[in-house]
Image (cartoon, rainbow over all chains, first blue to last red; front, side, top):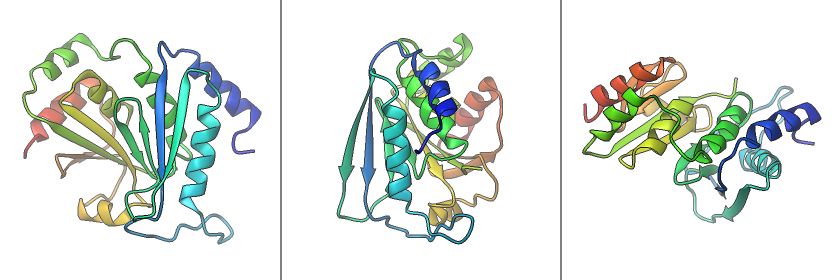
Length: 139
Length: 66
């Protein structure tokens, strides 16, 4: 099983806080810039398979989360998970990044943004598009 | 990572993307990523490390278009 019982219970408790339904889209396919990822013991990791296992396991823990899985033949930035209106995650949402997936779903499922008033005021003044990429690792 | 998502949810002008650095090592190298979390704004390396919400917002705004 991808997630243990304790993990499932913890994730279910977080997702119980969803205030509205959230769509999740998982895109799989050959990566445009292939790298070999090895697990402990030297076993090669299939990032598409791991991502699919994790995303499906998380999304199954709430009736308010819908998952669509799309498989691409063309190389691209896969696996790519898109949460709600466009929160993206490229790669396996494993380890610490499982929290990003779960809480990303929770944030997308809020009725109002979870930011302070000062931050919202600053963001309201933005008059050009801004793209934020955050590089992370699972450990 | 979650702060970036929160900004994107709060503003239609902001997009946010998490990228697993070892799987997308070519992109990480291109952006000069040596530590995580590393924040890239408008395709330019901005900073590494976690900061509080207010500082995150200010740093993103300062890095915009730089």
